[in-house]
Image 1 (tube, one colour):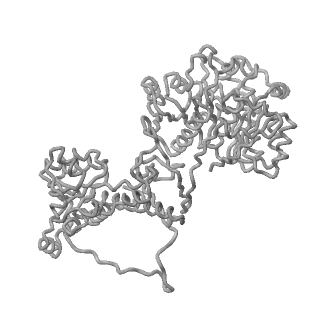
Image 2 (spheres, rainbow, N blue to C red; image 1 turned 180 degrees about the vertical axis):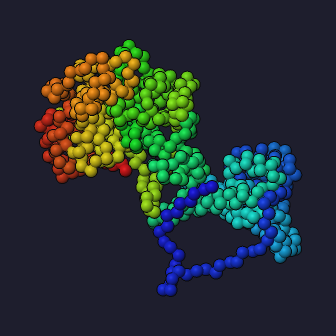
Image 3 (cartoon, helix red, strand yellow; image 1 turned 135 degrees about the vertical axis):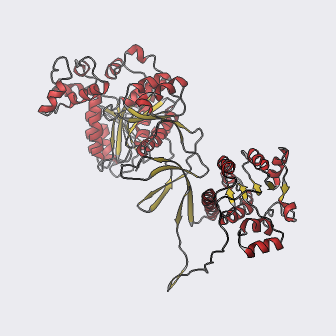
Length: 634
């Protein structure tokens, strides 16, 4: 089946009495049978993938092959007997091939209603034979446009005969089968072998797909032609091919649910293992774009840890300090052995390990054994990556009892310039946010400490800015040492974003406090339990019942971490970068950010309050650059 979405800017003409209706034709009576044997086929394809094998199969079933031009030559070169359409019709191809199949013997053979006495008599009187199947592709119009061809060449690649045969065959699907893609050949052959011909169900399915293809093709031509005139596009058609069903949508009651590709395009991922859900795939799509852009923007292996379509963490491959090793539970000597991609994911996961519980991971480089071993011990739903070593794949396929989701990104995938979304019966479209943040966006330092913006600072500005590009707005992000250390997502007030993310920064810092690192956990405690216990120790706001259960995890009851101890430890925090997806409307965000060691700020600018915000940065000794790029994400 195929889904067709159309965005229409004008409707049928109307009169004062209502909509003007054209004359409606009555149905033409004829016989309807389930299985139609194939005796004659018309073949005209631009994509010749698999056509020789398909035609050879048909010839082996005594099917007569009609064809044109390059297709006929290819089949003859393969040793097949082919009748040229020009010989069949008695009319030569003419006008530089513009007229080949536009002939009554072709369209009459496709449109003639079987079992209708008048149609069959007229076909016999005019020497029109029945054509039981059409195999065709349309001229590659969109590829011609994408290749930058001149206007006249694009016009020449508008197919006329193909869509005409396609529609004729699809209209008469009660008796004729329209095959429009190599991915249908195997099903047709299997059906013929099993049933002795095409079935009515198959013919209806293929007719629906053919009409959708025709609509999409005409829409592409219309959109392109209108753009050449500088006018608004009158109609946009997008044709979707369902790829696989999903258990449900965002919630269990949202059924049915599924994933579709744009017709004649691949999905951005192949599923190597597991059964992804609706939110899993939303996470994967956003996380994969994030790590790709981090890789491009920094030149370093990159990783992200996603939950509910926002990053819990993101990072690039920067070596760990000894205290970070202790906080992340890895020995310094083992950290030195980590590959760049493993190091990036270890950092991304440890930005906010409480929120990363059950994450969807993404990495920019091939997943190796070292990365797979890190994932093996974490609670995670799945991962998307460009590729996997055999050793890594074997490890990950065993995770979650074989249910761990493994997605492999489609090489060279292009999502297109425009993106569309349907919400409450409305179709939204916009140019995709394809800007990649790089060091060039960090050149406009508007504070006095310009030399403080080193290469390492620029790296952290890029990490934070790309991270919030894929975070639900409003959002801010804090970064240090090549990793996010606090993400504040989805708040209506920007200062609330800063407060939310700042709380996470404080927790990240205090996880490195000596008293936190020395917590005496009992032997056999689980990794995530230790993560959660450390965070609660830092927060300290236990209920009496909760504190009893928390203390039971330790061989000795830990001394509390006092507010004075926390404040003293946080007073040494510095070198943190803050990035915002839009301008700061007031200086309050800078005032609050100063509590968390922020030394550097990156933001779009453009507010009437920019001078106040700049002054606030100067007062706190922060360096700030204006990127000029707003990064809202909804």
